[in-house]
Image 1 (spheres, rainbow, N blue to C red):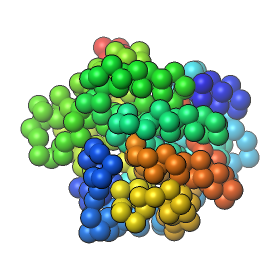
Image 2: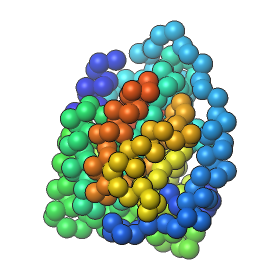
Image 3: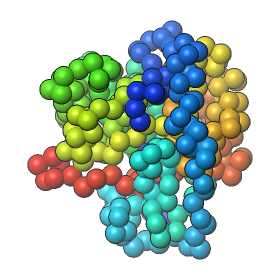
Image 4: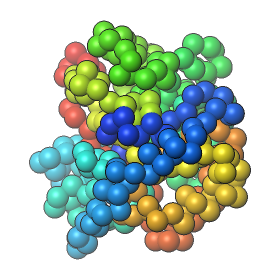
Length: 291
């Protein structure tokens, strides 16, 4: 399992509407929304200076991050402004990293994506919608992905636009999904990604109460029609100008994304990027009642 392998050997607002898509392979976002996704937040990421190189990694617990699930110190954190993955100060962690994330799981291809990533020793976060966990097939798919060692994140129950919901409805969207995931895997999610990147004051509060770190992304393309084929997607995900230290790659449970995943992994590594293990990324400590 990735968490054990990697650990023993050694993650915004309404401007991000293009970053998630509705269920179904033909669902997508138009060019205007795509332009918004590559706007202000990505400019912040492009200007985000790489963290300084550190001489060596440390196994000691960090004051800011604490220890991960396996008792190994957190080495990275989510930048609250850009959502890049950055080394925790004085951790000595490698700054040239990228994080793989897949939304809308397990809609149809998530297990196949996980199998491809496992073949390439590539860790990732699968952000799950609770609506896909109602069937036995969905539950089994999530269980399989989790048992392979991948981190499971919360992407709400129905992929609703949170600003359109009451605070009470937002709470149900988020906590119900946490409960479903915990019932199936035994673990409660540590990371939350709002549909379309649309966080609200309520979702911030709920995520904090649930002990989850908010995680949007720095770039992604697989919902745009021109990139809904594996060769084009694999090329843009590696050659984009937005690939920088700490890149947080947004992808989805789609067939073309599945078919591009191996080439994306190898392309990132060929450019000198290490794929960061989500188990090394800090999340808030949970209250005992939330465990």
